[in-house]
Length: 325
Ligand SMILES: [Zn+2]
Image: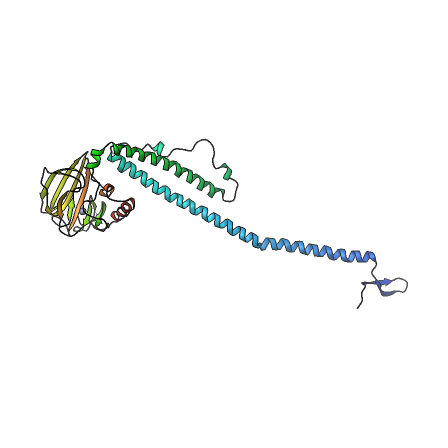
């Protein structure tokens, strides 16, 4: 095997083509050409690889960033949900608790105080998904402000409650039948299908389905102002006046156990469940009136329900089913 490189050369004198060994210059050219070619190929390969194929580290980093972005978006959705729950609590605070004590709704400018002043999210700008980060950060800050306001409003309500013991005894604050397992609530306040006319009608009370003879209780202290029987409509029914603008109505009884003028305390037995009047099955139709307006009784069971039970009952009562009337 030949160790040395040769080149082909034309000999002017002998006029022959002959092989001559490489000299130093030839070697330098020979290797330089190859090095340059290899360099070009390598550079092109790296460029192409980089462009079309990501390194495992890049892939891992991209996956990590996508995961973080997902989490951020999830947090934003959670925040929106919490905000909705808080809005519901605030609404109940204004429309029910504060109105029970005859006080004004908590002022809007206190409920949702602005931020003002320094831009707290400045340091979050200029990063990947800064937009999502800023949204989460602002959402949390806003929720905190609203929660503080809501808690202040509840402090006021608590003060009002402490100074209104007479009112607290009088407001209809329990369910009119035993309903520990919340199975009795059959139809709530709102649009319902009328059981006889089969049309959508506003149902101004709450129906508790229970066997004939089930005990019915006064839901707050007061005086019986009506105890009578009609052959349609409410059938045997009782109205109690509690004062402070409150009255409650108990309809379709099988038996009335009080008479007009009787003073009753919350929890006193006043009658038994039946199906008298316009009714399709034994049940108690119960209404809460305040200043002549018929309110949703579901908002008044704060004395005998835990917050979880209250939520459950409220959910049940909002189902648009058929009322018993
Ligand atoms: Zn009813």
